[in-house]
Amino acid sequence: MKFNLLSAAVALGLLSVINPVISEETPIVVTASRTSQSLDETLSPTIVISRDQIEQSRSTDIAELLRFHAGLDIGRNGGSGQAASLFIRGTESNHTIVMIDGVKINPGTIGGAALQHINPELIEHIEIVKGPLSSRYGSEAIGGVINIITRKTGSTDSVFASFKTGSDNLHQFNAGTFNNFGNIKTGFDILSMETDGFSTRTTSNTDRGNKNLSFKLFAGTRISGNDIEFNHWQSQGEVEYLSYYLVPLDQDYQNSSSSLNVSSNPINNWVSKLRLSHMTDLVDQNQSNDFTHTRRSTIDWQNDISIGKIHLTTIGLEASRERTKGTTFNKINDVYDFFIQDEINYSKNQLLISARHTNHDDFGGHNTWSINYGYNLFKTTKLLVSAGTGFRAPDSTDRFGSGGNINLKPEESRNIEAGLRHSFNTHISSEFTVFENKITNLISYFDPDGWGVGVDGENKNIQDARIRGFEATLKYNQGPWNSYITAIFQDPVYKVDPVNGNTNVQLARRAKRSITGSIQYKKEKYDIGVEILSTSRRKDSDYSSTWNKAYALTNLTGSYKINKELSIQGRVENLFNKQYTLADSYNTQDRSLFIAIAYKTK
Image (cartoon, rainbow, N blue to C red; front, side, top):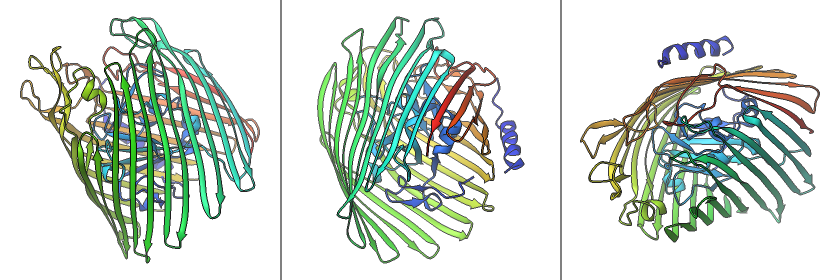
């Protein structure tokens, strides 16, 4: 199948114009600047996936939800529960910070956060900020930051439950309650999911399943002028998979994040926020002694000080202790951060300057910075320019695992971009961004006899990358119609191949062109939606000559309300049963159907 970006763009464009997106009420976000601001005030490219969009999508996990936004490439080794990698704007899969309620859940061992274990049913909304944000969030924020906000109590008490069944013998049950007891708000949400899955490998007919038990706890109150909130999210279960030699194996996992947040207002212009948090990322193989464990405890103290009506200055301290264990290492790292930023709003000008100093046990001091500027050309048009740096400290597997090298240096990046945000009217808006991100000291496994081939090599800082690109988004929301279309054209390349000296070699698993879109029609009794994704071919691996072909996918979603409390929901995934590849020799989902019955009181 040939990739045809133009025809896909025309098709979605026509559909967007038929009933040519922003919510009627502009969302409030916190991730872009660490302070609350409306989405149209952000100076970094920011995507918000609302609860309504999550419910209308009916995606089975977060990875499936994210892939329908251009610039977010997903690599996956099979179906439900199998390892999923996220590449934002062509950066590496471990160049994105993923947070649950503001708590970083990236493991300190290998790869990015376990997106495949996060079920959308427990999520209120998702904030995705693109670009280097290490000056605000520290190591790993080279490509961007994803903050997943879990469901919490509303203004009224509610009880909800749902049962989902469908292809691959999937069965899922979700139930919860939100309550208000005077000054105390509480919430509890639990989900159980089990599926037989499908064969993860193209050369085997052995299905590999997944079991997931997830729950969320929330409690909040106000005492003596202090807002106090406790959050706990946890996902645990078992994933079956096939080894390289097609041997059936399985592993147990547990991912969790807990936080206690206290916000106070000592004086009128000063808001002090203290967060104590803990995360775990545990993987244990059941047919061997292999395991990887990460436990991280963090103290984050942030102070927002308003100076007149022009300045909002943020000063903060962060300290974390991370313990990582594996078959070849048992390591403790202490990291201390000091960060400061100033947001200036004057007339038509908006400026955000931030800087951070990170002191790492093993890598010493590291400084990052960013400058974002916005100028309101007109009431409906904003010009955006920014520059910033990012870095990633090598993880324990890089240093002590197979091919480990204790002399590795941090990976570093420098990004510049410019954009234009324009609203045609109250229903139609658009955003355009051009960017260039240069990354140095990229870590790769290198063997003198052949890059990534031999057995006597080690990890080295041998790569430099350059990613240039252009993004465009058109959104529409009016009445029952809600739609968006997003396209990205990018050139993610290694500057020089260390083995053969070739230049401008395309980075693995990242497409040069992709387009995504969604059209939703929602009435009081029912809704129906279409999701479309089209992407160009991708190189499968740095160590092979295999290319994964371009592909296009279409999903169909819908629901019908039987009464005020009861509804039937459905999702057809891969509607036209397209055969495509995300990772060489691994299968992907055929056409599948999922049906759910949901009950909710307000």
